[in-house]
Amino acid sequence: MKKLVVLSALVVLTACSGGNRSNSGSTRGATGDISRACLAADRSAANPSLCGCVQRVANAELSSRDRARVATFMADPEIANETKISNSSANDAFWDRYRAFISSARSQCG
Image 1: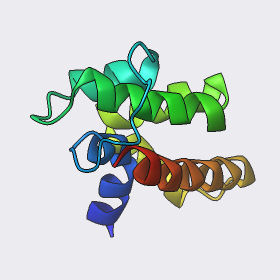
Image 2: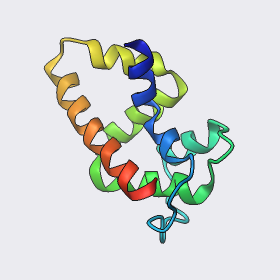
Image 3: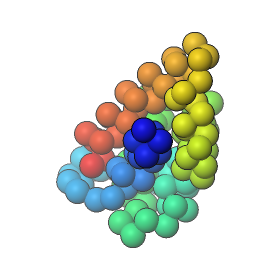
Image 4: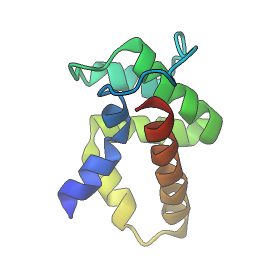
């Protein structure tokens, strides 16, 4: 289960792994916490266009607080695990928003 949580926590990096780039469109210059974390993770297929696309999706779907929180997941996946398994209604609500973001990032950037 921990591997599943870690993998889902790193969806932004998954979205940066390549695939159909036709939807990445005008994502150049989309910078922010998530884009920087995506590039800093040093995945071979991560590039400014794909990481920018993920950032653009995050900008559209998440608050600035949520975006900062998602970026921390890439630096420390254990934080994602703790968030997912917590019994906090606030964390549950965040996790729902995060899962919706994951789905959008995969469809728009992957």
